[in-house]
Amino acid sequence: MNEAHFAHSMGFPFEYIFIFLFIGLIVIYVWAGLSTSARKHLKTWPLYRYVLWILGVFSAAAAVVGPLAARAHSDFAVHMVGHLLLGMLAPLLFVLAAPMTLLLRTVSVAAARRISKLLRSWPVRIVHHPIVASFLNIGGLWVLYTTNLYEAMGENFLLHVLVHLHVFLAGYVFTASMIYIDPIAHRFSFIFRSIAFIFALAGHQILSKYIYAYPPNGVARTEAEAGGMIMYYGGDAIDLMIIFILCYQWFRETRPRSSIAVNQSG
Image (cartoon, rainbow, N blue to C red; front, side, top):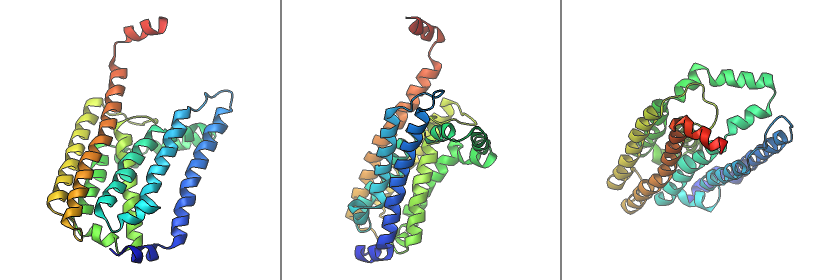
C-alpha cells in the first residue's frame, strides 16, 4: 500500500475527527468522574481510574492517528504494534477504568435502570459470553490475516475504519468477558473463563506463528516475520496482565472468609 495514496484517501478532516473523538472521550470521562465525586452520597471516583482511561485513549489514538498509524500503512511490523495497542492494550486499560460503572452513577436512576435492563438483554449476554467473545476477537484476526481482507483494507478507507473498529470492540468485549470490573448480568465461573482464555491465547499464538511462516497477501516475508514475533511476544506480555488480574480476582473471591474477618477486626 502506498502510504501517500492512503493518506490522501483518508484526508485530514477524518484525522481531525478522530483527534476530537479521543479528546472528547477524555473530557467526558473526567467530567463524569469529577461531577459524581462531588455528590455527597457517592464515593470519590478513584484517581487511578482516570489514569487508566487516559492511557487507554492514548494507546488507541496512537494506532489510529499520528506517525505510528501512518507508518503502519506501509510496514507490517509497525501495523502489528498498532494492533497490540488498539486490540489488546487499549481494551484492557478501558476495562480497568470501569466506564460502565461510571456511566451508571452519572445518569439518573431511571436511565440507569434502562441501561441495566439493556445489559441483561439476550443480545448483550450472547456477545459477552466468553466463548462468543473469543471467537469474535481471535476469529476476526484469523479472517483478517489469512484472507485477502488485510490487503483489501489497505485500499479502502471505509473498510480500514471498520476493521480497526472491530479489532478494538472485539478486544474490549473479550477482555470484559474475562475479568469482571463493571457490573455483569450473568457471571461465569473462574474455571470456565480460564479455559476459554487458554484456548483464545492458543489461537492468538498459533496465528502469530502462521503469519511468521505464511505472510498475509501483500506483505513481505521479512516484515511478516517481524510482525509475527511482535504479535507473539507482545501479545504474551498483555495476556500476562489479564492472567494476573483474573487469578487475583479468583483468589480474593475464594479465600477463606474467616481470614477476612480476622483481617478486618485487626
